[in-house]
Length: 300
Figure: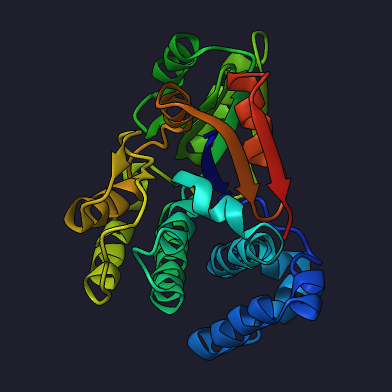
């Protein structure tokens, strides 16, 4: 039997208009967004569908929005191809998407996952507000070259690799001055893109957001997932609730090892991937790892 893995996107995949069709046509998706409104205290679907983009793109809204929209896409697949859910042998999510993967795998309930994601978004926004910082995508260089640039540009500030996404596509996080120095030093050897995010995610600049996430996770129950969830921090599959809880806290301030995760899944025998949620970012990254791999998207 073909081994299948489900992938869930992270912050940045959101677009105004997402989830409208699923909400209107699929009762299970409608129930998710109705429950989300009760948990959050505001109409999440309204922001997903109508924006404005500035509100949807804010960290405190985009994280719950992508989480709910991705699970609505999962319900769409459940309604049309339930056998594919039964064939799924592993799952992973990019940063925020790790929470979506845990809900799919049965480790977290939707409501508990949403509560933690809400608190995570608030805490990460607060940490970003405390220290002006950002993220820069470096395209066209491999990890050793990017590490040299980071060392040269860091100075007395904070600057480090944050997302190792795929070959020749790495993201660096740091304070604003260090990010600007990196962009200047990289201009002759690579293309850089300043990401539209609140701050330097997946670095120590996100402290004390990790403590807030730890407290939020301490208030919910994590069950052993029914299939392994590959985590961002160590690019390995996990089923132990205590390990999962610890890794989710560490994820706030440590790099996302996405390319290593994809290579691990491929080496473990996964030959078919399904990306569930808004955008096609993960499918694109996976094709950079293995251009022949079978990967489809179920849109939100």
